[in-house]
Image (tube, rainbow over all chains, first blue to last red; front, side, top):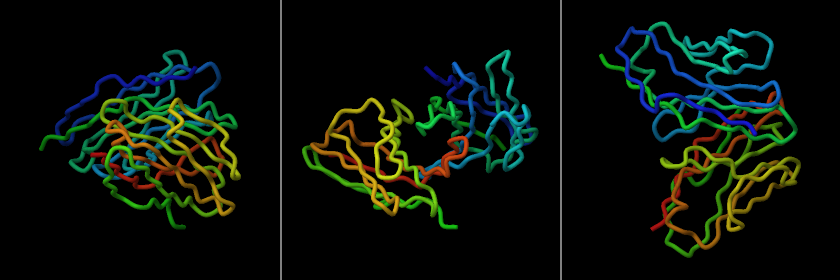
Length: 114
Length: 112
């Protein structure tokens, strides 16, 4: 069965600092991996996705993630945090099969200090 | 292209009542999934519909049901509401590629 683990339910960084949100997955088949962001009282917005085309994936708002099969990781990074990045971030996995559902991690709430 | 729309956005019900939530997917998307989001359990998959058929189901009691219409619009129904059903219910549609899903803004259900 697939699963996703996000290390750290809360992460706090200073504005301009590096953002690193951790995600490890478990999957018996080559996975498709996603990062979503959720702002208060809103739905989820896709930041980026890994679909086996390239291990380093660039997304919106300056975020990127690197797929490391040996570490079963898909960590999300951004070189310089902005105040507007404060939100909750979810990592999700899919086996890409015909049954279309995502397995989500518990989420990491990112705070950005001025 | 219009995004995924969900109605109503907010709903207050009392225990024992039933509720119906609606979701209109992005035009051309034939798959619609529903998720429940709570602070304690996080995001949990409810069910997925594709071409009017339930294709996949999560681990929820039979009080939770859904359906999909020929225009791909979907509804979910919760009968005999319990306090624990208070949650944000998210609908997502997919074009079928890599199961990338596009989410609506959600319906916030409060059960009193």
